[in-house]
Image (cartoon, rainbow, N blue to C red; front, side, top):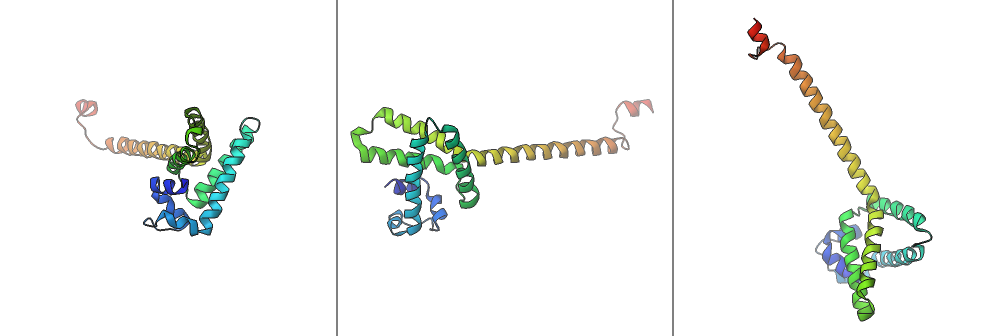
Length: 166
């Protein structure tokens, strides 16, 4: 149920499982790949809950590495984490009904936010690095252009102080 909601909210994620964008999410139950991934997802959530608190540093390292693999190998982007978390919380609401209290909802939102931030860390770091590199390239390019202008302006009369002295 959570997966159907996820694919409704993030249809481009279907491509990660080898489906066409037009594929009906109800076909999921027949997919061995998807069932395997769903099982791993539930195990991940179980592990996350177990590691909260005493093993938080180790959990963070694991999630950063897992996120990097999902980004570089599978093509998961940071934009996909929010709809996945929303689908997860909606599933909790549906399955647990009134037992899923407002305070539980807020805790899960916080947990999901932290978990997804850890998993998206490598992609965010790479984007920041690319921005810094691009900014440096732009600065270097401007410095070269200014140098060329300075060299060529020595040969051109610009009507400035130099021309008045002639």
